[in-house]
Length: 386
Image (cartoon, rainbow, N blue to C red; front, side, top):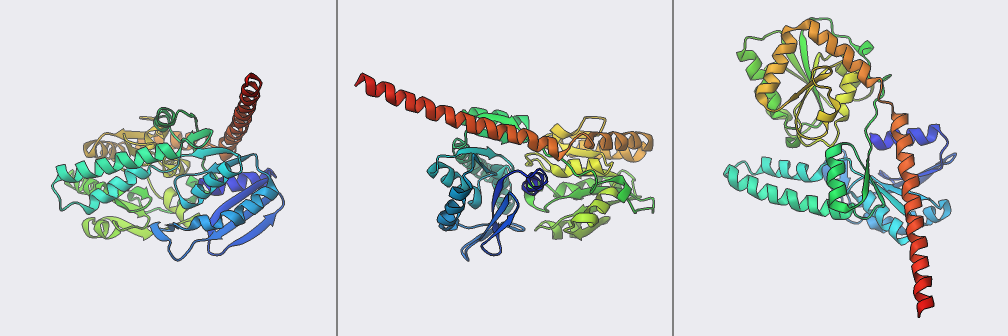
């Protein structure tokens, strides 16, 4: 989503740009200063998530991409994570001596550990956590090594910035996410039945901790609350668990566009139990729909929520229950938080995000040029001494 927003930004501003990405077929499209290089993945590619695949043979496209980059002569290459396309980009930036910027988008180490932990429920907790924690550390070590390649780094929250600075020795800057306040708006609300709706949007996978939604429902019913539903948007292998263990859940599956914006607007409170998200775009999308959010105290979403104003940060299930009941029982406070959530979202424009990204591009280009000048000077000095 962030990459697509960047493409929209460069097209709108007429900036010269080559977008290298995977696609159903290998093809080149030109639109003014914008070039799209779509590269087909091989039959050996395998699924990482819904709609996301990894091709271990993606490097076979290196010659094709290099030919187009030599024609374009880029100042900087921007890679967006540890994936087949970005590995190709990192390789070509090294071979062609082009400045490299790397942005962190997904906590792969936490995703991998959480998913593996879900598969190891048959093991004693201590054994499962020991094994998955070891794997999580090793994946993070590998990610830090990978992110040593770029001259400049971008990350969506301060915890990740600090981790990258310490782990790579590189300069890292904040790259938040914007939100489309025209697409996501309280004006899209269609619900008039008076039912209080808790919402969730995202992959229904272990790393999103979605089983907490079922536990929250049980606790609310036990507390005597009844006039509420859960609107859970998304697909994933936890869908059947939620369907079988919840009595009030509406599960419309994957939604996008106007249907997704309508779903957000029909929510009253957004529940986001994930503790592995690097940022949490969905929290801002809910805010833009005038929906306050309750999030965990782990990961990036806690940096978005303004405690007690646009939502709450929950330390555990008890907190999720407490804050949910508070907003059910206090409609005046809920209304204030809805207004504050919308006001906050209106300050988060994508244009300002990418203007800062372009400043980082310039820094990376200038930094590499200075390194090359210094290396050349050192070589001349060494030659004169000889």
